[in-house]
Image (cartoon, rainbow over all chains, first blue to last red; front, side, top):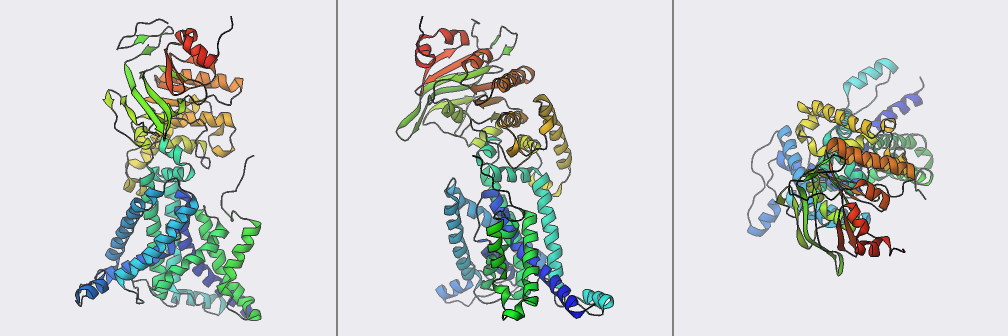
Length: 328
Length: 274
């Protein structure tokens, strides 16, 4: 087999893995958009906030220590204990549920029946607030996140591909774990929304608020539930991205990469978010590999957006989104 | 139809049993800013009866239905349900008390199948909690099956087997109305509110809907309060009629009394030319 094809295969595999991470972020967007018609600009910051909180809890960091030190001249930083990864993840998930309750109570509740653009603006506000709040709470330095996911080149894949093709592929173990987790997450969420009572209520609220009320569904409960699930998805995304590149404030920018993913997959489709993520992941890696050298490289920065633009022109509802039919 | 109105109820001419008062509206006044939609209206709904609310456009009929179902909260007056005064409630809480409704402009979940739509009607009756549901644990699976069976009975009853799996968005208007009725029935309500169940239907569809309403009342003993424009339908269906005009009550009684009520004829049916 020629070298180019082998390289291309390796690049494709790596693209798939990167795509899974994009999909994880996009998934959070889709969940909230489906249930409440809100494009949640804060989804990326939620991932950042979740990752910050996780690291903070794990290392026994004292929240708001900088603020406390500045006010009282103390020298507090750490409680002096370490929390096991699993427990820390559980605690962080609880924090995200708490966040969902606060968001419903102090933001969404007051904006019922408002235009989508107003709600969108509110989530922008929420994003900046959470970014600042996370900074004050846990500090702005780049943190290392380690919850015990193995990292580095996967020996198994290397061996396997070497035996098959005489050339070992370089795939990060972390990416493989991320892919497996994403698949489990998507399957669970799909089953939950299709077959459970709450899932059905969730879809009902997404479809028609008035009708949902008339069959006895509490909108507030459903909103808290949706934001909690989105918070949990953000936590998973935060763990994966944080383990890969450290917990830093640029993490919130991965939300921007989720936008083209959503335009491809459709804003209302969970499978769409996954497929969209994979297409973007593979697309940008292959484009960089084949076309990049001809036009000076660095295509990964813009490829996704151009692809999304093309989709907006030819298939605005995305691959899996609900068809927009206007009855006259 | 000149029954003696006793507190325990009476037997109608066609042999149905009308029970004691299920819901009572006492001096309800509803304002939107300076506009009075409903002015000081009182009436009751008895167990097992079909109660019609009629009146010209803008008389406040839908507003009254929205007060009953909790979508509007009246500024004055009391709502009594099953012998107790009802505190101000959210619509979903009213639904959980056993009051189901349909809407004038149809409010269905367009993206979901007919079956799923009707299943949402049973949400209030499902008892398993979030954790059990999430893990599909213990009762969750069995409960789903029981409710599915109940929903299938309603589907048979309303003769919509052929569209069970169809997304509601694709159905014609008349069938949507029927699915909405099915969803309300699925909740096995103590009081069923129908807001213009026959609006925009052709004669054949109207006859079907009439039959279903009568059958529901007859077979399940469901108490029904409905708003309707078609006078012939109202007179045929209902046991007692409330007539509204400009937010005020101008008549209340059995259809025969309403037909000969001077104020009603003037306001609603038009002045008679004899």
